[in-house]
Length: 226
Image (cartoon, rainbow, N blue to C red; front, side, top):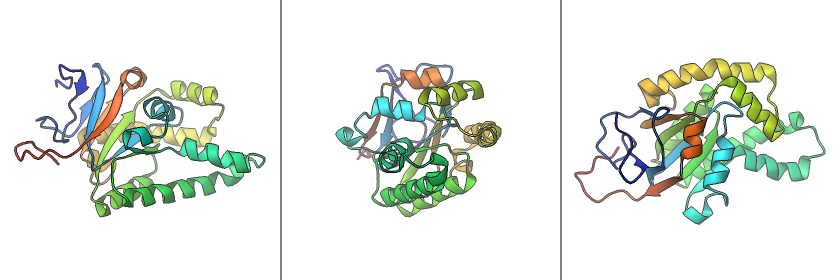
């Protein structure tokens, strides 16, 4: 499938920016560039811990997205904020509260509408269902951007950032991830209910993304749009 435009941007299935028949795509064997989505979108950036989600978000949105009119929700940013207050307390003690606070924040921001980028590992089924439910209630279209990296690369990423996930927890993420990729390739809606597109990228592909932009809906009724 030809996903690369002549201007270097990517045609994403189901987005109303190109006539592409499917709602899925695997970019791991082609070059990437700028990814464009409609303004009424929530892009879920997913990957196992250490895959490079926060690194990608920090590179594309160094100011958190304000400069681009995008709200970027990253649990790593929230953790850094909390660390300033709770740093003297072992992280394992307040990690569950951090996760709860993050998802409450995500749901609140989704009610405000798009465009929105959400950082999540996507390996927790209840979280995926929650995101799908909230998007439907907020009239947002869900698009998946999945960073697919080997487990050893992800573990190296954890060591680089100085925060290593417990072996048992990491094993669970790694066990669930291949099935998640398979589902996303077959039907994005099997990953997050109602999702209309999914793109799968490896680490190199993620490094080659030059932008993540959001466009107003086209007024042309002949432009397909989900």
